[in-house]
Image 1 (cartoon, rainbow over the protein chains, first blue to last red):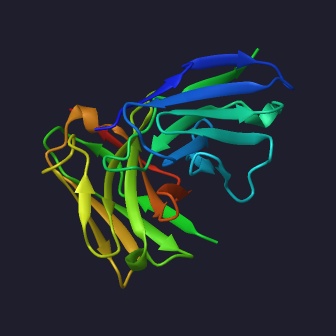
Image 2: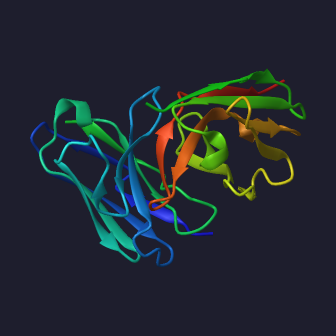
Length: 107
Length: 118
């Protein structure tokens, strides 16, 4: 199985900050990497697919990059509604594993 | 607009069974890849199972042999039959569409809570 490791596990930041979350796969997954945002008590929401493609309706302050085994999610300027948990997911093969999540909190 | 609505969760004793349903609107279950993803309390997301439009099914090792994913095409509904439930199966279960662009889960239901406890 492909293991997905995110760092950091938690992050404190302020409104307006630029933040980067990293996801590493245990083997190459090409660009088969997706990012989700989840708020407490809610379902995950797709933000980025294919490592760097922005899902329709997602603000352009979100961006993704990377290929192979190392990927990043960047939020260019944090807004209050961005404080949530972010998870990566590989879709290279089954089982379609997720990272453990990164909780983004207000500083 | 795609809507997925899960139901069937609840409290069940270890060793018991439960059947989850996911009623879909705005998409046709039979022609999409549909999946179940779960989240234990305070934990991350865990992929559980997927059914491809051609009929193939796949499962996480943690549920293989105990869970069965199926579709009711006339009712446009996805199911997850869960047998031999264990305490570690306690989670919110989400159904989601697996979009074939790059294998992303682009539509999710609101989730249904399954609690396995005596």
